[in-house]
Length: 565
Image (cartoon, rainbow, N blue to C red; front, side):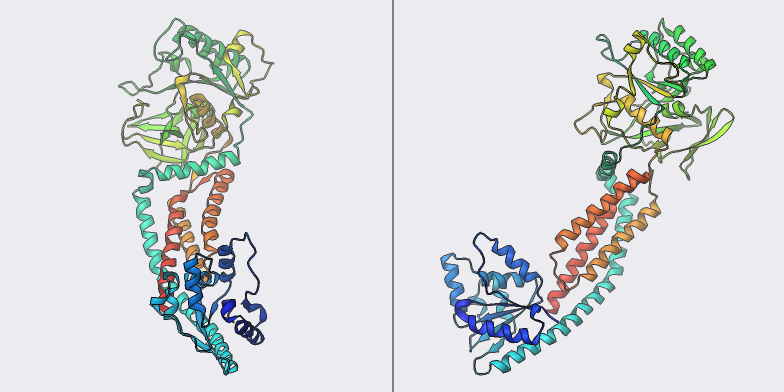
């Protein structure tokens, strides 16, 4: 049963139009027949109002009397709003079925007589409505309207069938294209992939702040005025004193995000403190960023022999933002653990980085453990910021949620090394069983992450502390595998197809809200998967496939709809 909209000029055909409405309202449900008998209030957005009225109607009866065309021309010449002209133009734009109803022998305007926005009216099949045959004419119009409902139903069914048949080809083309793009990492090469993933992680980190382990403590070392490039090697006396405090407190580990290359007079005290810590059960970790020609970590001689762990501290970056951490690196036959790995596990041996799974097998003393990582990468070229990483190196990378730096700088978790060493005031057992991450608060050690949009404002050791925290809490993010990504992409394509087939022949105005709403809903689900389950979906491919499928079916529907009319 069609919904019927009657458009007319009051000074041209008011009485006959109202009669037509009343007769049709007696033959069809009254709620399905509309005629506007009220003036549009002043100050109303009349175009929006009329457009909204038209959207819910299937058939428009354009009542045309003897003065219809002259009034149109007069209003156009005087610059007066012509509501009737706009209604007809909007109905044409919305692809409504329009039936011109000619009153008492009025003629349908020709193409030459009509302005461009309503010129299609001249090519439509009209129906007469004369005073002396009005009962018969209205009955004919009603019969046409009853038939139009069946015809429209049949037409919509045919269109749906054609779209269903076309959907197989659309799925194949869109799916194959998306697969090809993903295979060559096209969006990643353009930087779009990383930006989309960063946006997902940013929203997840903001909405679902990661849990910080109660066993994580940070110690910041403020540089002196003379330490413009890096902390002076004489600082190793302070390192030794910090190690002594950690040992006395029975800390699990104290890890220095600091490299040690040049010898200094304070080395003996440092090595002595490391030996004492080893005997006291406290693990000591130092960082390194370069390798010797024979493949050993560049660090102060004697550190390893004294019992210190040397962990790789290079930070992975994409698009100038720190995104990835490192769990381990395999270069040639040698494998090196990271700063975070040794700080948390104290692994004594590490097996090769597997290619078919995301668990690193390590030995801690005599106990075997599996440590989860996010992705396996192969370095295509050397990294100037990480001399230890040669081309061809295999890396076990970790993706993890980031903490707001204010949380890492909270006085309950962060301690100033200067204040601590000037007047040790830790209560007994305050550090017992904890992992202490020590680093320099040096301007040259600032970096930018997704949570630092204003620029490099986070110290490197704070990023390392988040990596340590992720290993302590198990908050390692897992990128969804290629097969799962592909299946999810197919779900998005099928969802677009199902919606477009359902909406065949119906008003398209909801699409303005549904399309962006669907995309935002998908992104919201991806954020929840990241924030709550630690799953990272490469959402850009899915969104592009969804939008392209939607657009292709809209184009096909419009083409076939126009062809049918």
